Length: 165
Image (cartoon, rainbow, N blue to C red):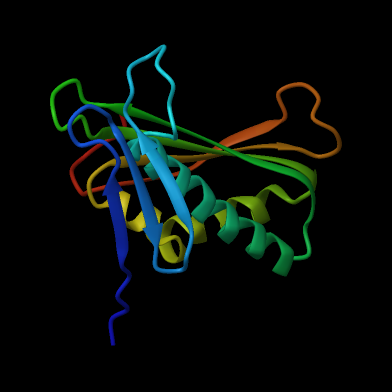
């Protein structure tokens, strides 16, 4: 049976502002804002949150898989960048996800963990891959974060017939 999730979003000043407060079904809130540069903002833009959700979703997957593989991660960051179309609705046309890992981690274990997240476990990645090309990469440092580390392209996901940019 499908699961249903509900969100309630409230526009704070419909006549003048660009802020929305949203409440999730699990009781958490987030503020969104589209204020112009230089103006006070209450939160990120909705499209920034899309990239944030992708980063969080794949990070949780990959960290969990690496733990199961008994890989010793000292530090783990995910850098996500997206390129948008110039015309409305200004959707993302390409996204790059780079996993930055420091620790006693085998490159193959990291590669496979990222692949599993991108193709099987992360629903945010699956939804975005239906319409945009996503490049999944890693950078691995075996001890401390020194030099360039070992870097590799794991895979590119996206809709059929669309190539990375």
